[in-house]
Length: 168
Image (tube, rainbow, N blue to C red):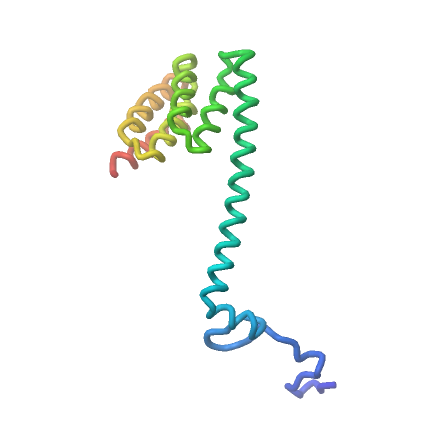
């Protein structure tokens, strides 16, 4: 056993540590540090991570499709349900179906012109699709809606986004 002043470690204490210097600092074993230099190991690691991300993406898309089906069912029962229409537009936007999302936002805003969040999210969908001129027009309409309804928070967010788009 080591004494209080002795810096040596007992055999049980001679496990790999995270101490080190230079390139391998912070790595526990030689095996892991050898893999750091192996491009094929790195490729396999990245490929594995990509496969996991793709599997998660497929799950999310399937969940979105389930939500889309549920929202469409609600809209068949009540086509004037603003929240369901907004949710459907958002789901289409989330899965990248910009045209269908904009179609749903258009239906929402024509039936409920004071649904301020619809303007903002439609503008964000358009901006993410690099349709900045349409996004700017949507924001101008949304700001007018926010003024009509007295929603100063939405007004300030849309004004900030409009200013940002004008600078691009």
